[in-house]
Length: 337
Ligand code: AHG
Ligand code: MN
Ligand code: MN
Image (cartoon, rainbow, N blue to C red):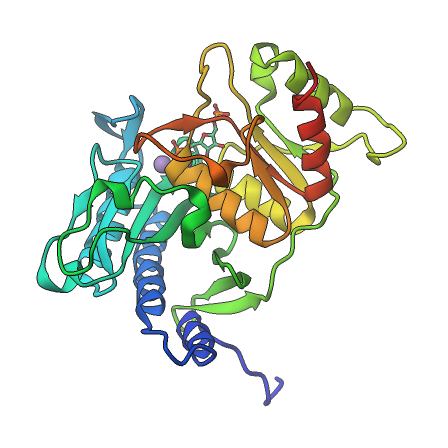
C-alpha cells in the first residue's frame, strides 16, 4: 500500500476547483453532488436488478411513444427528487416527462441553474445485464432569479451548457463530467460509496479505429452516410482502416468507450425515422459538449450540434460524434452533393 496515496472524491474535486474562482458560489458543486447522490441510488437498484422486482416494462408508454421500463421511472424519480430537495436547481426537464418541472419554491427560485437529463439511457439493455447509463446537462437560467424558471431556460442552444456529464452503470460505475475547463472521470469506490477521481483531464484521441452504428438500418441511411460506412470497412491511405465495428445499443457505453479509445458514434436519420432517433436536449447536446471539450467533434450531418437552437423539448436529431479526424472525414462525406 502506498501510504502517500491521495485520492480525491467528487466533492473534494469540485471544491478544489472552486478555490480557483474566489467569486464562485459553490452552486454547481452542490448540483453535481446531488446528481452523484441520485446516481448512487440508481446504481444500487441496477446492481441488484435481477433479484428484486425492478426489471421489465412498467406497462406505460412515454411522451416519445416508447415502452417505459420500471427502472426508467425509478431513475427519473430519484433525479427529480434529489434535485427538487437540493438548493442549486430551479427546475428540470427529463426524457421521461411530458413537460418541464418548475420547482417554484423560495430556495429553488433563487437557484441559478436548470438541469436536463435522460434518467436511464439504453433501457432496452436493462433486462439483459448490459451497461446502461444516465445523461445530464446544466444550463444557467436566462429567466430572472427570484421567480420560477421558464421553458425558455431549457430551450437554449447546447453551446450554453455550463456542465454536462453521464453516469455509466457498467463493470464499474463511473461518473464523467465536463465543464469548459475539462473532462474528468470518477469511479464509484463501493467500499466508501464515493465517486473517486480516476480519469483526469480526459482527451478524446484525434484518430480512432472504432465505428459505432446500427448496421441493421444500413439500407435506410442516405448515400453519403452509406459511403462513409463503406469507407470504414476499407483500407485506404489516410484512415488506417478497416475500422472495428462496436455497437452496444446504450449510447452512454458506446460513446464512453469511443471517448477513451478514439472512435465515431453515429445515429443517422433513417427512412423510418426521418428526424433521427436521439433526443437533442437529453442525449445529443450533453455528449456533443463533453466530446468537444475533450477535443472531438459532433454534428447532425449538416451543422454543429451545439449551435442548434431547439424549438421543442423532445426534439430529435441525427447525431454523429467522436474523434476529430474521423469526424472530419464524415463531414466531408456528408457535404458531398
Ligand atoms: P433510451 O434507452 O434512453 O430510449 O435510449 C436508447 C438510445 C441509445 O442509447 C442507443 O444508442 C440507441 O437508442 C439504440 O437504438 P437502436 O436500437 O435503434 O440502434
Ligand atoms: Mn437515451
Ligand atoms: Mn432513457
